[in-house]
Length: 218
Image (tube, rainbow, N blue to C red; front, side, top):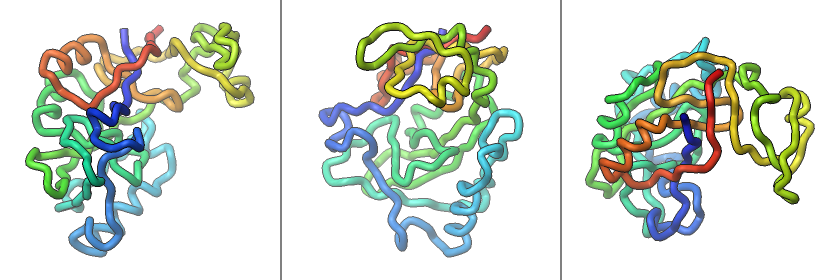
């Protein structure tokens, strides 16, 4: 079983009240050179196919020698962090301790490069995972609810899903056999295996929120 995960939004844990991010890039301070900045921006401006599982193109970490993020006032040093701008291809900034836990599990080819967070004592890495395309989602076997009435509704396919409004998801069924502990599903987010979630809790890693929505592989 997999559960959807996202960044912790509790300001008592994050240290900030926006509920989304703790650190940010700054236009004239975050990159060591114009060449590195241009490469970074061009990579994340790539077509979406470059970020899908079957055609995933890793960032060349050798061309990114150092990126510096700057914390917002009051931001706390947690194991999972989201920065802005939030790029497709980067899910989290994670501590080295957190990365060691993640890499002890089965992962797809993914983005990883070292970053600096000004004033934080831990070593951090940006990580981002390729997405399973939405045409592999089995909408008829997934569970959706009307957010207003909380009643279950039936969605036949992705075209019907795109036309629907005020829809929540409770279970996402995927017609794709994958032997990974981290799976990203377009457009439903990032899912961690139960084993990985248990390891995160055992290692007392902070900054991650475990949601109720499940994902199953058919």
